[in-house]
Image (cartoon, rainbow, N blue to C red; front, side):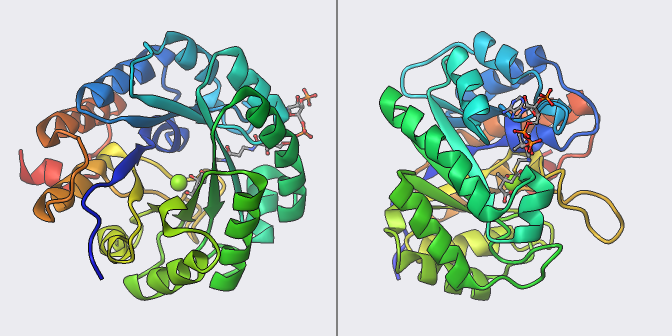
Length: 302
Ligand code: HMG
Ligand code: MG
């Protein structure tokens, strides 16, 4: 098992991070955050989502965010689009890349996108057709790959089959989401092994929440298996509003980009991000949101 020399980091804080905040964040602040991320060297940023604003009001400003972003050479700004309506909204503000999202869990699918898994794939068909017509790359997410808050354990074979379908439909990358952060290096590795039997390891990304403190260990296990695309979020912001724990609060804590960068530096894996600057970006947004910073590295470097 060898580690990749270089990885792509998908920064999801403006979307996954801010969708889960109680407060509404202005488009202006989101754009300031995005500018700091770009300045720190981030080259792929999920900047918003074009979902129903009554479902996720925090993302209602995504149109304004994309209108306000300064486009830069070599930087991709992407957005979630759950259906053709969302895709058309994204195209109206010149989004360069989109992501569709589904899951292996029928219960989570109903709660998150109000349809079955099969129906979600039917909704994506026109999105993928329209995207292909416009040469827009489409990424896919599969949520709850290591466990579901409503259905418990998830069979990795189901994850692999869904990844294969999304890939066949035209998604260039499938991001495997441990939405509730229950995975450990053992079951995450076994799940990736199954998925890699169906799609190339180059087309697999990992999106690992840190709810149980396992995210970095799970990323290390993924890197050892050849995964070279990692989703993360500064200050550990984020979570899905449609995942509730037994206390009723929503799932939280993406792996913090700062902590990921520190680990990658130690492993001598290239990523293109400046640690000090990304720490500053995390501190900036934590201060603005008046919340504690979820990055251990940021706290250690104080
Ligand atoms: P629906 O209610 O089934 O949709 O929602 P519908 O087609 O029946 O339409 C109902 C109404 O919604 C209509 O308006 C539509 O116009 C409107 P009305 O006629 O009643 O006034 N509508 C829209 N409006 C704006 N933009 C749109 C749109 N689509 C319909 N795109 C839908 C289906 C999927 C839209 C809804 O369930 C939804 O928006 N869900 C949001 C889910 C979400 O954003 N979840 C968080 C992201 S996923 C996640 O966090 C996991 C991830 O991070 C990975 C991981 O961590 O594992 C990706
Ligand atoms: Mg997420």
